[in-house]
Length: 353
Image (cartoon, rainbow, N blue to C red; front, side, top):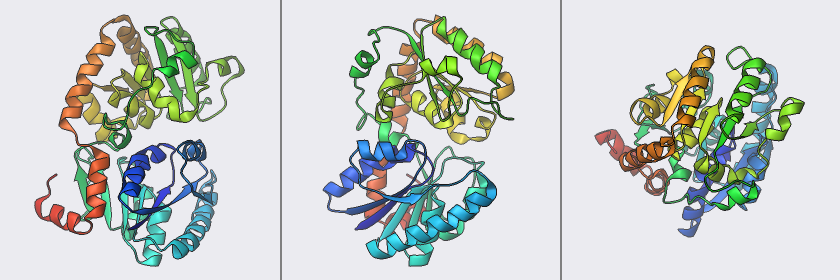
């Protein structure tokens, strides 16, 4: 089978598909990866020795995004026409959905964010199946397939992820030394995120309890660049695994920390609308989320967790419970794709996995 995987919007999508691609290649399937220039996506693809086709980059304004969508559609269409895939895959991959319709091949999309309605409008008419976590709150129609897991388990399930303690030596961290990972989407204030003063306060407060590392998509204020994580991006999950606490913006990194059994606090006003965050918080206690205007409560909770010497052990126990409940998502993807479309017909009859 020839499979086109589109790494469209987030570097984490490289992780989602990496084990699937490796295992499927061993089973004789052929892959072509297309990727947009987004954050560290190319860096990750190179680190994992994946060949890929660069299809472009999205601008920031609405008009530029529309223009770039059409340009990337065209570039991907030319690539797909030459490769002749049997199926196309992606996470929220709008371009892959459009190209699949043009070449009349099935497209399967992973979607785990309920409130990105505009993206769903752009891909839903063109795809064959949309995979969503069982906790996904939204009904997306007859094309929807609910799986009992989180997309992050495609790469953080113990069958694939083995933490490497060498990361501690690389950052001059002691085996039992406390450290906190903070994530900011942007250092500058925005209407639905933490303001600059709050970010400075958070860093200074966390520093009282351990070493602080910051991950951010943008430049930090001069005095705070020294906190930026300096390791290569493929090592971030090792760092998250051994961390004492994660706190900040960014739902994906917060979810990754939670699934790894690291106390995880997400500050995001959209989190309450997301079934994945709801389940991690209410069913497993692995993640705690706060609206942006409740950031002071989030800071207090962080200090409470850091003062409790048993927090990390407690989270690891919660993680084990979650892992017992959930499936190996990569294994599910392999079985589904190799048996498609019968795998989807069977689900439509039983609605159970």
